[in-house]
Length: 210
Length: 161
Image 1 (tube, chains in turn cyan, purple):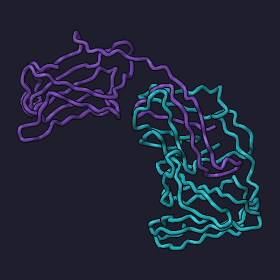
Image 2: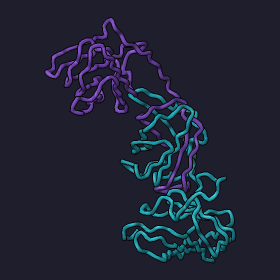
Image 3: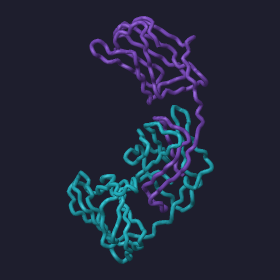
């Protein structure tokens, strides 16, 4: 797995720990933490558009390696052996399906306006209940598009947005960093079109093609 | 430290750390025992990366006054055990004449050092989406647990498989 970004990652890098710098280091990232991080606590990082997956499904021989140093003193230094399965990466099979007849209808396309976005397309594999459909918005959109917010106290950090679909029936849409994940309740044949309307998506604030 | 001879307004104080110690980019130093000048000018404090803490533009400091300096995130660059922390403390009058001088020799300020044994990360989890082969620019996340405390300013490097 390689890194597909270069230089400063401040617009692509999120962390549960406050950081001051996030950059690439060739085949990974460097993060300068801006706060003490206690022993026993976790660091979680999210990298947007940061990975190129390998061309095969062979499990990597190595896993993620972490080093941490301060003032020239090494504090964390993972051994180059004994990687856990959770630290290794295995690419899954190639995507075989295709999307056709795709179209987007935006009810109001003025810059900065909140609008309904209608996506319609056909999937060569159709839709089976339990599948997830992901729509990734361009970087000019809000991180949590469509007034997404936590709908259920039982689901902390899960952000829902208002959406609807004729083909998929009752649908749920969650949002995480410009990625909307839709799950429907009705199967759709590959010959039928799938429609998804995402409500109250705020258009980018400048008028330009995305 | 306790001032031996009165330091007039407009003087300065220079505290030099021993070579074993250094002020880092994360260091924040606070000073007590000094007041602003009569015209309201606040105490100037300078503690750049290195080994010197400079204090100036303070009001008159009476003989016998106690001045305290506290700095965070100092690093011990070499040495072990209990090396001296402060090398010299010198105060000057407004004309840069030395007034008080204190040397570490015979008056050692010591701090017990802690040897850090490098730990490892654990409890790894990651997501790559989509994880199909030959995908470019995909999103991902990873999560791991630390076995050692890492201080503010630490550089964490993560290398992918």
